Image (cartoon, rainbow, N blue to C red; front, side, top):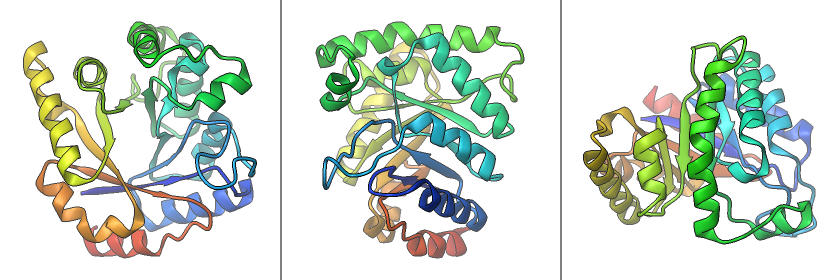
Length: 250
């Protein structure tokens, strides 16, 4: 079972985030993530907050072991060609450890305050569906190419008619949340989509976001097919539970 951490970029400082991701990398986690929003998602809505992709560039430079990425990128905040180029550049900074996590977006305040069209959930999914092939094609045209020739794509979300179909068509990783029962349902539907399009479901790594207190219940997620747990945490970044898990399982 792989383990990662998602460090929330709210109510914190860049110095505190850098200390946390360096510590997580040093203890041997498999992945380190942040989120792609412009305002806090919990607590004081006017608290401090930092932008995702500039943080990821610093994270890539500061670490040497873990994969790094956004959990997940809001696709509609960036032109697809630019998103591909930004991803490729961070991939080189990290020496090939970048994962392009992407989703259709949902946090209305980000859209309204930064001047993006919020539209509808089905509309945002259509924009993502149209954009994924563009991102993949641009990644093939860049000079130089990504370090490994390509960049793994993670898709996050629970939509059973569209999102999970896009996972089956395009993704190397799929991310969702607990509890185990709802996560199991999403994995079963993903397998159905893989069968419909002729994709081997074992090609898609199954990741799940959990709370720190759920580390004692990782076995329940593993039993239903999770391969990679990602522990979500805000500042102060208490990595003690993750450290114990790594020491026990690595």
